[in-house]
Image 1: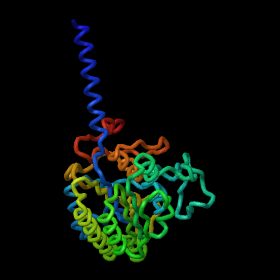
Image 2 (image 1 turned 90 degrees about the vertical axis):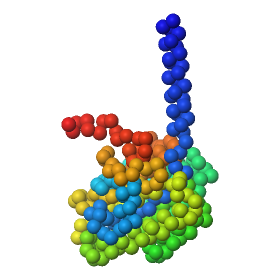
Image 3 (image 1 turned 135 degrees about the vertical axis):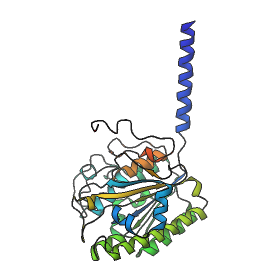
Image 4 (image 1 turned 60 degrees about the vertical axis):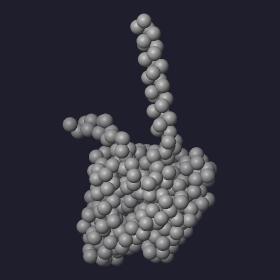
Amino acid sequence: MKRIFSVLAIIALGSTQLLAQKKNSKPLFDHVIVIGIDGLSSAGLMKANAPVLHKMIEEGAFKYNARTVLPSSSSSNWSAMILGAGPEITGVTSNDWKPNAKHMTPVAVNKVGRSPSIYDIIRQQRPNAEQGVVFHWDDYGRLLQKEMVNHYEYAETETKAAEKFAEYITAKKPTFALLHLDHVDHAGHEKGHMTDDYLQSIAKADSLIGSVLKAIDAAGMKENTLVMIVADHGGINKGHGGESDEEINIPVIYYGKGVKKGYKIQQPVYQYDVAATVAFVFNLKVPYSWTSRPVKAAFTGFSEPENLMVGLE
């Protein structure tokens, strides 16, 4: 009799695990919109007049001191977000990187010899997914393969970039799309980080993000879209690229239905975790070469890592 009960228990456990697997196979969101603000520091975000972003923090999950890769320059960090790893793996070690030039060979390469990106795995595993990017920094475009996306567009100003991105969202309702805004970084270089001009540039970014959120709502996507606010680096005085806290600590915001409200993320968050988090919510397999890990604790029903405090207490 005990043996029968044991067998039944094993069958029941197996059925429960199978149901759990089926439940987890459904994507957490139908759409992911990433809005990247070049040069946005955590200190600048919190001090600026940015009601949209501050509301997203209050109603979403937030990490104040997410960490850049080194060097804290734009190319290394924007590439890390989409390539799921740092420069030592991707080969994008500086702003001098060019797609067809001789550089350090990536640890793993796709069919054109580049490090595999989130765009690659979405295209591979969800071939009909609509993907797009609108970028304000003209050099951003070289960091991804144009043929991997359905929509690839450069805009001369931050305002035009946001307008074009909003139009794209309402017209195509993309599965995955990224907007890059560059004007905050310009203010940091020209006037200095934490100056009035720098803080005003963040306020401008805030209003543009508000227009994108309205487009998401107008497209009927609000209930099933994850919005991620990211930055590539902060800055100190009129520069960045070094290892100071002001340069390497950047904010990350996760916002949408299914994201914990007013939650301060405890686990370390790294620049390259953007890629794995997108893959996680879409239930995609990721390349073994990635060091990226999903920030699961940002979402309802998921906890901080159990081993978070190992070695610390």
